[in-house]
Length: 491
Image 1 (cartoon, rainbow, N blue to C red):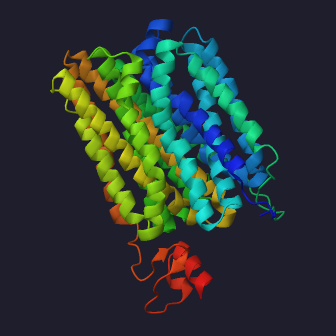
Image 2 (image 1 turned 45 degrees about the vertical axis):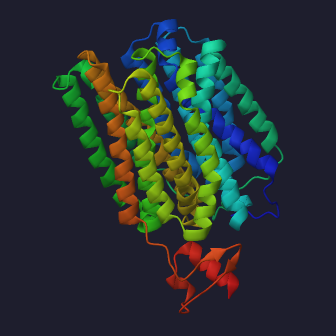
Image 3 (image 1 turned 180 degrees about the vertical axis):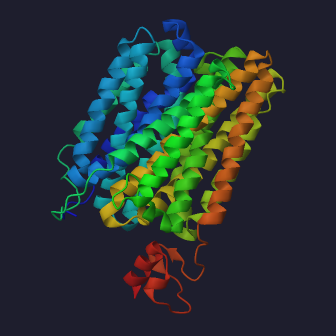
């Protein structure tokens, strides 16, 4: 890896956070303004559901490729490309008058996120160390996990009082500010050995075909008919493409996805649970749509309902960092998933009368934020800390691919369940079942952490940068990666 004496600054952190927030401005805010967009451009609910999930889907598909490109060609370069694509994609949505430009813009925004997420995570690892890195990752998480709450609330307010297109104008402003703030940061990339490897085009193509066909089944299955020839063909295409993808990847030495990374149990646990917990993003789509259509809330009022989520997720991210430093990552990841599940369960109590339901939903969203905030930094730090230095971009890409694909399929599944049951005339039941689906995702995330993430070593306790006790002595190689580094430092 190219070396530099440069150390990360607060200016770099803020610039990266602004870049990450641009993703949430065009991704999360959209889930809060579904009725406004439908009314303005006359798009069907099926096409709008596709448009909502496309950004996460395309960022998930290409994020690993972008992570590898960041390692090879430069993390700063990929960050600039991502911010430029963000501006272009947002312009498409500002100018759209129908489904075509909306969908094109959402695809470009997905490609933007694919570049920004792994490249900025890699910059955090390259230019920050130890507690400074954990602090930097906490702020990155504030932009990523907290950004979903900020943009859900801000999106509702902007759509109600300025018009929904202004969300994407503001997104452009944040992207430009991000570019200015990170300007002057040295380039960071892996030193090339001279050995060129062939790009895994077959793996990428089969992965795209599998993911797009599965997404179409979920989002359009009810329209096509679940037993129709189109739906059954798409399912067959998915199964064949998925089988071919695994066949190709297991034979490749430079595969699209480096399965060797999953030999590390801690990395596996963080990535799998990250996929499942991000699938709970469908909560905001279902809850915001339900309270606007079923309870008569405006977009701004529905955004106010989730302000507790915003405050709690922002407040808990730094708390999660401190918990990580004291007791390790496993417990905050488990309890974060369980608290998130509890919060979503409260929002599913749609049989309650208006006033009581409003109070319960506010509490539920607050717990949702507490859980995600507690989970965010321990999970991200576990994934990044256990990634090899020469593969940090690819490892970050896979970790964020899990986020994006989890969000894409979670939104698609929740919205589809909600739409199918709503068509039968029972909107309260539709919202309840759609939200309980997200509870199941959270519980699955908790189980994934319990099964795959190693228990934290009790004989090493790091507090205020000091080792309190090491008993009995062990060789550094016996410890997990992050603990081994701490052990060596204090010998």
